[in-house]
Length: 157
Image (tube, rainbow, N blue to C red; front, side, top):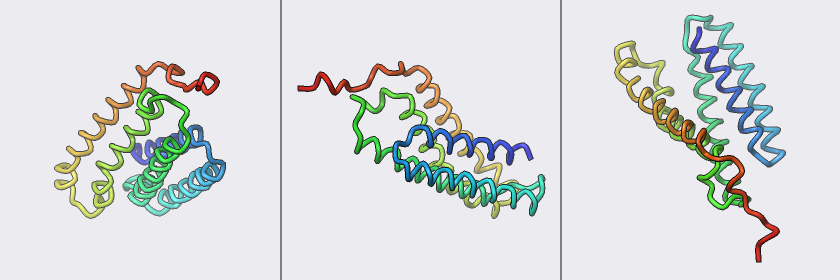
């Protein structure tokens, strides 16, 4: 049960994070729609499976939508250049941390329901490795000095 509640709060938090950093209004509306859709799917899974089961459908929806939002974030950073170096911003490191984590565990979570407990424990080492990588990259984001990387368009020649 705890994992499913954690998954709900993590997903809604990630949707909110992307809602804050994405500039396109249409994408922001799509994020709101995805949040509502995810909450409905989570509630249906809760009523169908109870609190003793892992909600793999919710995880798959989360992974696919967050990957799409990450790709859009990178696209937006290429199109709208407002910093000298993208890697000098904390949001870049947070987005990259989740990109590596979700890309690394995507198939693990996709096939998790079809594995028995012994196989799940064997493959969970991958999850631990990518969780450590995600945590380290988020730590890098904590040490990035905010606002030092903005391009001053008034001083451009």
